[in-house]
Image: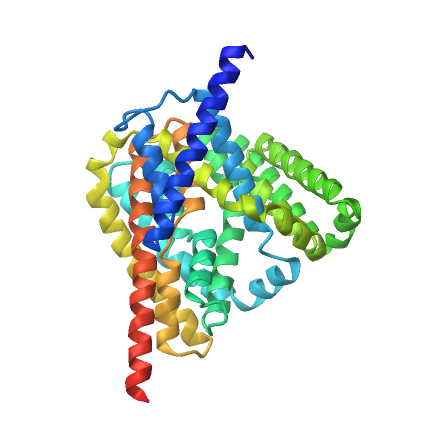
Length: 389
């Protein structure tokens, strides 16, 4: 790399980090989620934006990949093998209802828009998957972690994230445009690999812990990061998705190691998320947004309805009050990282550019509306409880 390229890289990185700091200050003062601001910043400063910056294409591409790999690794750290087993046993019916109510929405809308079956299949994934990272942040901000509905929400989120481990390999094969026999072979290889990693997460955590464990934090950091990159690279080579590989590594790490990795990486978690959403925004041309704003809003309102129905059914089955179901619905309607990962795959593969634009507008709509709905429901619940007393 030439000296001029190195200086450009440092300047771009510095401008990006200073800009993220300013957006975070603004979001904290407003008491609002930072994610919509990061996405809007990417739209504003990318190609076709209000004030486009000359970010190199390589910088944007590598930055986005690193951001999503690290973000999904940190997300995987939130789950343990025992939690996966428990949620698979207890939450499967609610997870199936959630899938049946929300995946067909995007699939049908994509077909009605005249898109190909592959593009509609990607949109189905966008409408199905809620945002574990944003929802966990809302739970902390509102003090809802100990609420009765929280285990139900977490159970559904775990099953959604696991479903992505099956869904994304299928998407990767579809995007390659292989013949039927080749596609089936590739999907089987991908699913066997995912199954092997999940088996390791459920049954080989102690062995993995002995491999990574050390009195030195540096050894743990280098070993875990090296493992993430190794598995992500292998997963990408097998058309599984590097992001899913990183997510599964996070799940596989045993709890004692997770606690130490969290301690080292938690301050950087928000940076990983910021980089991911910012760089996705840089890849979407704002000029493609106006034609999809109406479909995005309609799709968002329909998703809000179906997520509320899924949440009410699941919380009723769990035997908790209706207000708990409403709070769960407000949380589950929030979409984020996986929706953008799915749309990003479509953009990279050169599919309909409206897919990325629609996903960005849809996610922005729900990531803003979800927290507002949650606060409204919380206020309503507090007033109802006070009047009952």
